[in-house]
Amino acid sequence: MRRRLVISYLLLMVLVLIALETPLAATMASRETERVRADRLADATRFASLAGPALRDGGPGPIESELTSYDNLYAIGAAIVDRDRSTPVSSPRYRPGPVTATVLDIALSGQQTSAPESVWPWTTDPVAVAVPINDGGEVLGAVVIVTPSGPIRRAVTSWWLLLALAGLLVVLACVLTAFGLAGWVLRPVTELDAVTHEIAEGDRGARVQHRLGPPELRRLAASFNHMADVVSDVMDRQRAFVAHASHQLRNPLTALRLRVEELGPSLTDPDGRSEHQLALEETDRLALVLDALLTLARAEREENERVTVDAAAVAASRVTAWAPLARHRSVALRLATTDAPAYARTVPTAVDQALDALIDNAVKFSGAGGAVTVTVVRRDDGVALEVRDSGPGMTESQLGQATERFWRAPDAQNVDGAGLGLTIAAVLVDASHGRLTMRLGESRGLVAALWFPAPESDPSVEPAPEEVPADLRPAPAR
Image (tube, rainbow, N blue to C red):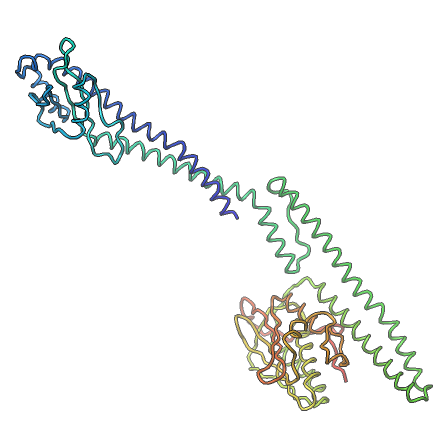
């Protein structure tokens, strides 16, 4: 936008300079031509006063020596032309041409004249001046002086170059002024853009200085800061409500489950026992939903401080943690990676929790006899982690909905889970400037891929595997 503003200012200045300097350049060319014309008319008038006797008597008289001296002194050709257009007297440099013929026609009619009106830098014709020679009211002939236009062209060109230089300096000053003015006008907009990106990246405390730029942009900056304060306050209240509600519901839910569990021994009817077991499962499901909501609220409340972790080591630890559950469900869980570290730059617990959610789903839906493979590779200036399963997979429309909150596939409504695992993973990956993608496997199953950017430089010392807080790590179900 700054470039467009500067170009607009520059275009306006160039138009103003053209409008001012074009008439001035034409005036300078006319002035130089008029100066030479005035001198030559004065000389031609003096020669006309001396040429009368030569035309009447038919002899050269003193005019011939005058023209020769004039030619030798100024290198300007001159001649005396009679009414028959013959040239009884001329200087050595005199050469007739189209211009002399034009001025002679007017001079022999009794008027002094000259041509051309102005000499331009591209003009090659000489300046011709003709003055009639009168004798008692009768026109006997004319004096013609032909001046080379080279000196005039050089003078006009010099003036024009001076004008161009002055215009160039004015344009340069205009460009510098335009950059300063555009910077002053756009500085609040630039800062607003930068602060918007900072807020989008998670720094909700970033604000715009509202004392810069024009008054209109100052009001815009103040309005933006007020909007950011309101939005930040609303988000804090919303996340606080989710966290507080999830936390406060834990104790009543635990007490309810204990009371329902104590009812078991007193139930003798088979149908009652079946309903009792369903009630216990629903309380467990509700507890899982509350834990997931609390984890999501904490993940969204992070200020996105990023740390360097060894993704290969984290993947190995998570595969080890989920191996007992995989064996219990007759699923082959293995890690395909090298022993070399694969460093990634992420927010805390991002790799751990994202892998937990993906491995949990892969083991859950692969079924008995299935296989789950976790792969860690360096790719695209970062680290890619893939969790490949042999389950039924999902349709294209389901892949687009998988990270929505509480979404569950139609054929997975009765499967344990809260529908928030992929949502939490997506939040953490996005805060790490990474990517979470899912696609169908080549033959069957699903491939869930994580990508995290690499740090600017590899750490000299391999960091220890990241410890995940106990309240943020979902425990594998038994």
